[in-house]
Amino acid sequence: MRYLQTFRLIEAVARAGSMRKAAEDMNLTASALNRRINGFEEEFGAELFERLPSGVRLNPAGELLLHHYRAMASDLERVQGQVADLSGERRGHVSIACSQAMLPYFLPEQIAIYRAAHPGVTFSVNVRDRAQAEQELASYSSDLALVFEPIYLVDFEVIHAIPQTVDVVMRADHPLCARDEIRLRDCLDVPHVAPTHRFGVRHLLDFAARRGSRQVSPVVETESFELIRHYILHENAIGFQIPIGLQVPDDGSLVFRPISERDVPPGNLILGQMRGRTLPVASARFAMQLATALKDYQITREGVF
Image (cartoon, rainbow, N blue to C red):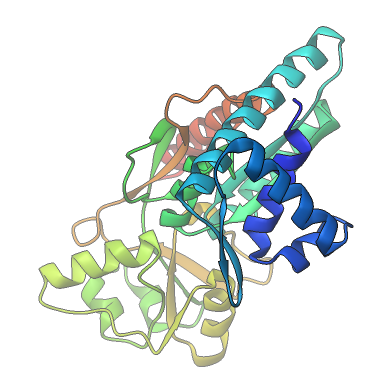
């Protein structure tokens, strides 16, 4: 407990990459922050930062120490949550790294439901691609990850997973709307807008296209699924997304159809945490709620189709 504030200062410097910028962020003078860091390094017995012409960055000793602090802070937050439960309070903070598809509908609804029961709990929602989300768990930057087709799964403990098809997103007057079944070759033969290679949807499309000796050649490539949904209204191209991030608009301007599973098998939308970590109370309870909501969503989808 003695060094908690110093650890926060070290984390601020690591995040800012500059003593001056970190001092501004923490409402300190640069000289006072520098003295605090130097004093800790002297007592700790090792330097924590490389001093560079452009600023500073953590050295290996600093990275080890910061990892220790984040683990300790997580444990402390968990204990604080448990103490709050003993007193009848419902407080805490939940941080979640998620795919963009979670933002329009699923996650806002789930957070609102949770906060209606526990208004003292706050949230951080960090939009990350599938590799970044796993890194966020490993660095304790996020408690939970909800991502489509994570890559490594080394330190990733799966809480719940559901399948998601790759859907074609198109204007209601697009010729492909008349097809009973949409094949991947149909999609590749018309102008299409696709996410970049960092995203699970693109990974599945590329893999399936290569099997047929084709390739995904988008007229627009983007990291924004919102741009995909809006751009296709202008050029009458098609886009791709997973269904949990889609909702038919009231004006009927957009239509969604799954690509045939003969061409592109469903991927996995996975809720997880860092392997072996005991989550803070609020995060653990929210994870349980998300798992139940994902199960209900899957049952509903299977009932529809």
